[in-house]
Length: 197
Image 1 (spheres, rainbow, N blue to C red):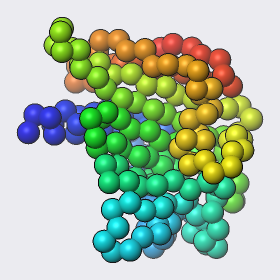
Image 2 (image 1 turned 60 degrees about the vertical axis):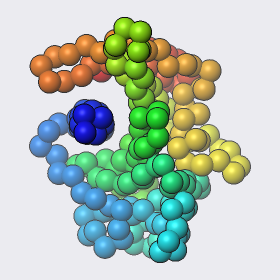
Image 3 (image 1 turned 180 degrees about the vertical axis):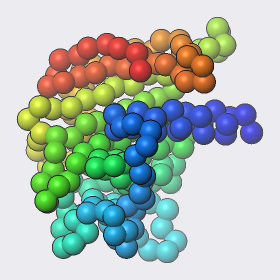
């Protein structure tokens, strides 16, 4: 039960900075096409019994994909699309031992995409020192374009904004009240800056 509580706290802390948004923004689930507040929806290709299936981000009006890439929802993953104010967040939570989440954040206004921000956050436990550590990367591009790659999955391609030579650096958690602060590598157009989030 404590492990579930830790995962829940992790997800709540991630949501607190999901889109650089303030606390009074409305959150809308855009996973279904029927949501009238969303210009983008999560298009799923699956049968009733499928545990692994293809997902795409599509325009709610015409059904066309807004990215040339799709992604997959596998057995140990959970994908979702939500709207926080004006920004959309497509996320994938890994339910296996990595305890990781990765997501992209973007605006979609008048059928035009804004620059895409990519985030990857994971946790680890230092059993020798009994310390839980969080780390991650935040990447974006001033050009607003994702790299073109044949046969790439959406979040894989977005992660290439990080110029994958950068490795995560773990640091012990710091706390301010109930908030967890952890190390985050910020990478803009391939240049890394370190900060705590």
